Length: 260
Image (cartoon, rainbow, N blue to C red; front, side, top):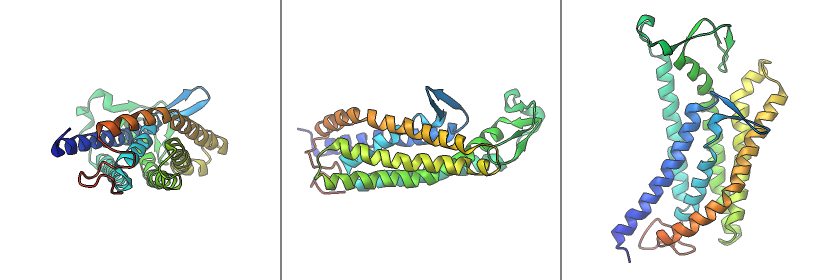
């Protein structure tokens, strides 16, 4: 039997690992964003979407093992991290660059033709690599922040709604229903906010928007369904590893069944 201090440390370490995967996946989404689109079968996806389903797996695990308060806390930390990423990128964009003759050769790109950037500006001739990345990701980061707030809080609330409704049974139902609905919210919001201005300028069609929304949601929905088995295995193993009963939360050693 583990001592209280050792068990408390084990529970906090597991939470830190889950939080790190959550925050790392979310930050990776914002950093690479829409810098590249890839084709996965019939789906056209921004490369930043690839790690995003891990965020919902992590919040579902934290909801199940640590309770709603811990999950909401992590979502709030993630929102603050989103803001920090946007602030750092903006400061990097407005700060004066070093003189062109002292720039590394890979810092300046030569454009063959004038190009309309996602933020509405035009680029021609030479453009700094950072400015190109900022133009393609800053709008996506802002869109991600709005979608993130709506989708992640929605996921946490729906997870606990279904848990109360099923009296703690049917983990697959609350995992899938909460994630499928919140992923739909996320997919619609992030695409519309990111590409809404581009659509109104007539640079993409409504069909392209629908393809992007459909591809994003199809990928996330498929990932949500696939992660059901890993979720069951992880919950079963972690409950034993963290010394938790079926209805316990790993938030206190004095009364582990206290709802969070």
